[in-house]
Image (cartoon, rainbow, N blue to C red):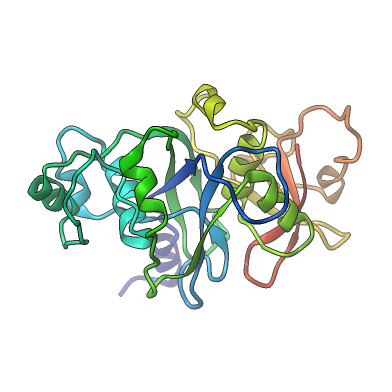
Length: 283
């Protein structure tokens, strides 16, 4: 029998997973916005991973994701999960009705379609303090106004009821404003990526998005603060302790109100009941 420490170490190993950021040139019925595109977000069902949170489609990699010799398993996973969860098939066009099958790769071969090639935009690892951890590769696929096969699917979107409560199309500023008003909680990767996308108001400019070096993953270190807030320290922050919160002083977690403060790469936040957070700022 494994000792308790060994069991904890085994449980802490992050599971390989992937997530897809899908953007589309559609107008939403919500508040007026300067953005001419929306981002696909899904809300997780109670009892699952990221319960009740607003996240991007995605999930854990499966052995079959490695079957495609022409595409990395991470990308296949993100495309497969998006299809299973929302019904959006991110492949080359087909005039056939495609239903999910046990093997996504075999399904693509059967219908003569190829997965599209999304842009890698980041890799995040769940903090070590969390019981359920994931090593998640994030990808982005921008639907243009000429992608008829993909655009025609948007109105027919469906949710996988075993995992999702709903799917939505929001502009980046709509989600971030809702988070700021404590109307919807986010997790660090989603907040970070949406904050990056918020710099682009036109879908035509998203192709120029440069996420920077992707070799090293971002593993936040979550630190409670004496004022009731919490700070997610990110690599590059002056207080980032190599992945462990030990040795971080409370004084190191303040200073975000000083714009000129150097050496900050962190998210300041107020924890939400869902397990996500309401962000105060990103530096």
